[in-house]
Length: 321
Image (cartoon, rainbow, N blue to C red; front, side, top):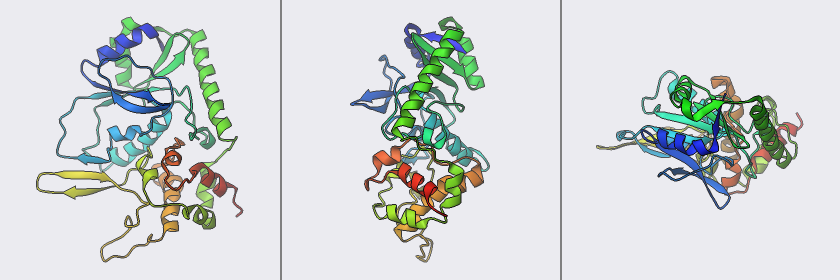
């Protein structure tokens, strides 16, 4: 691990920006939104952004025939977004490989130092910091950042910028553990101490359709939950003479499962609502060996029906067999 003083952070970012577009989470009225850096100073403190990082790799509307762009570096990606991206990579980069999925983006993640009111990663057993999937990770010490390389590219960047970094002392390493623990306690407290085991959810979904039906009554099929989810990946294509557009799709739309001839196995709301939870806690672990929920809470924040998806999970887990 290396240590980067706060006064050296701006010099490091400016050097990286010479050959890359830089994006970072800008704070606006208590929320964080992705912003392209135009040379201004920025901080990595805070929590997850309103929109997921997946939009850099899998935007909601993408012309697959237009690909002229600079490589990019994402500063301040959070652990929940990296867990979502890990699933997207399994979907799009394993056989058969999607040639349109971006591979020219470096990820400089950062530990969460606060929590959005809807975050529930800790309730799922995850951490409010990145554990893998980053090129560099920035953790917060009193007067700078502890920086850890997570890839060969990350190690090379540290080597090429060695004049800005120094070895991290044990005292500074202890500081980041204190910051991490404090953030985790914040998340656990606002989750009411809930401990939701994904394996239990997977076992109980099929047996507790009545629980899902209760919440499905409030769903308006807007698709907000899937659109802001860092791990949802469904899409459809629209092709014309000069364009080939990939749009994100949602399993919550009434016509999502409709097939040729008009048959629709999930025409009613409850089967669609149930499918979302099966996908995330049963299908994805079975097929990609990774759950499809990261506990970011964006689905709660965006739901037009006022559904708290953590409460849905807690009710499923606590339901009688």
